[in-house]
Amino acid sequence: MSAIADNLQAVQSRIALAAAAAGRSPDTVRLLAVSKTWPLACILEAAEAGQRAFGENYVQEGIDKIAAITGRNLEWHFIGPLQSNKSRPVAEHFDWVHSIERLKIAERLSAQRPAFLPPLQVCIQVNVSGEASKSGCAPDEAPALCKAIAALPGLRLRGLMAIPEPTDDLAAQRQPFRQLREIYEHIRAAGLPLDTLSMGMSHDLEAAIAEGATIVRIGTAIFGERNYA
Ligand SMILES: *Cc1c(COP(=O)(O)O)cnc(C)c1O
Image 1: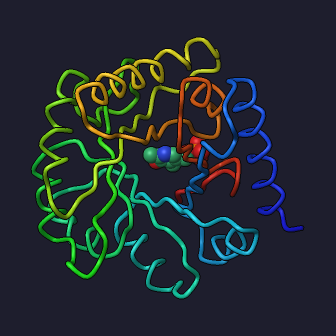
Image 2: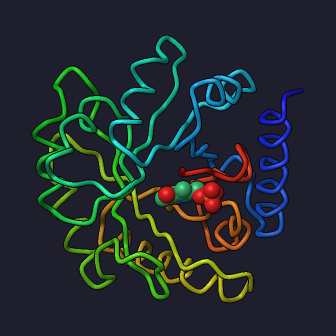
Image 3: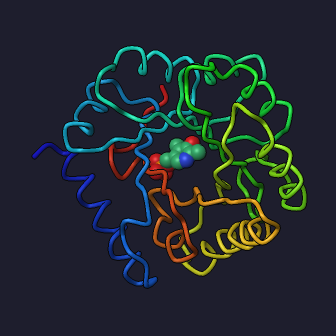
């Protein structure tokens, strides 16, 4: 087996253990392989091992990869910061966007989504406590933003995403994930049919699954340490 196939299997085992510990079925947690900075060969290796969903952070890099790999029935998720002037290629080429933080971007993506494609699946990024980046809407803005985005015809609102500050302490890792889940439950109780909590990365997927993650976004544990140089 290739190193990437081995790593995928190891990550799937971590997911299964964490799900079992939380009394959840492992198939309630989807693995998104975050392939930013990694060449096509690595993505193809993961695809050979059965991985379907890939996450990219940079618009040009992502659409170049999507254009280069066709006919494999892969699913592409945009998970990075998105500027308005780069929304069109994302609307035209990706299947999901996890990082929506403003209504204006959502309106552009909706208007730019080609009619021959299914609606773009989207999550709202929320800046929960201890967030490393300044990205995401404020927690108290999330319900109104979700309501407005749910009405856009080119999008299908699926749920919420967050990127908490890295920490090694399991209890500290769980706190922001719990906060995101509580916002999610609140929005569901208000009548929006959300089904996705995109949370958990290589170092904290166990904490995220314990708090209800339905998609974990894993890069390093599959492909290795990234080199941005
Ligand atoms: C890079 C990235 C990941 C993957 O992080 P790892 O620590 O390598 O697993 C997940 N989510 C987002 C938004 C990222 O930018």
